Amino acid sequence: MNTSTAIILAIAVILMVGAVVWIMVQRRRTEELRKRFGPEYDLVIIERGDARQAESELAARQKRVESLDIHPLEPAERERFIEAWRATQARFVDAPAEAIKDADQLVTEVMQARGYPVGDFEQRAADVSVDHPIVVENYRAARAIALANERGQAGTEDLRQAIVHYRALFEDLLETREKEVAQ
Image 1: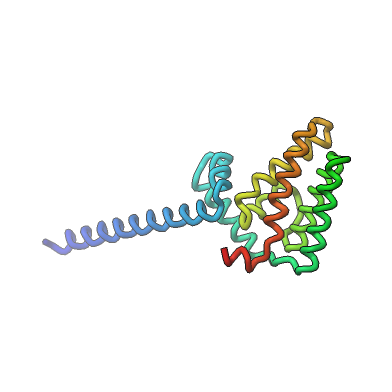
Image 2: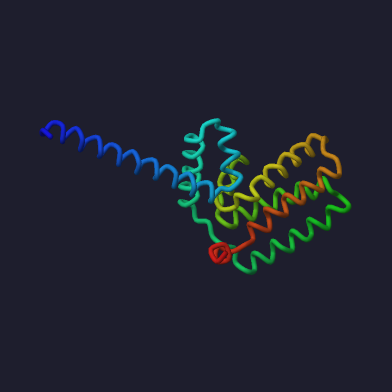
């Protein structure tokens, strides 16, 4: 075998090994994002129509949230929020439309107390999806019903479903970081 053939063969082997490593890294990244984001992973792929764009967005979300100071609630603060939630649920019986507004505000307050920025709704949902991917869809559904409620287009059953959705996110947000890590 002459020198030029050996060089070409070595380059081909290096390129093949590089390609295999690149594919493995991409698969691992995909698996990690799927595991971390759960159903949110599939939703973003559907929205973007492209897996690479979706994965880039999810990785950017993760990086953004990691830069935030998300922290557990202090026990007293947690208890205060639990009492506020009980009052909101009790209010639902007599004034469901107002209770939905209260639930939305209470979830926003818990997010803010934990350290999430509370700008526009889509950014809040994206941020929450990093640490709470299973219940973020509940948040979106509850918010959609709350907006329909503001337009006078939500019935009592819709409002009941919204309070259930808000409660799922609320309960997930109340967990402390230590409990989340321990699971």
